[in-house]
Image 1 (cartoon, rainbow, N blue to C red):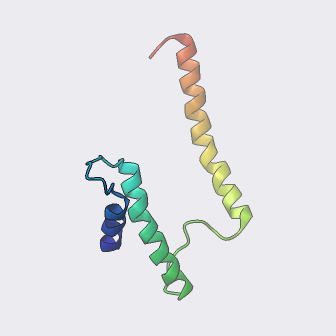
Image 2 (cartoon, helix red, strand yellow):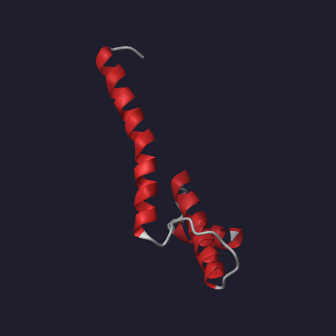
Length: 87
């Protein structure tokens, strides 16, 4: 996977000779893409991998609802304390 990730990074570099700094998020996504493809291939072959996203919509919605509670709490607290003017 690291060889393919490095090849993807090389293939996304500019061919004009200018050196540009690549965002860390882009590098992460290029390596993650190779992991996801290989994981899916192993999952199809029934190699015992666990799905990151469940196949049913109800399980995905339960996960999204559970993840939204902490995010909404943080947003509420930030807005509450910003309105009061306290750090």
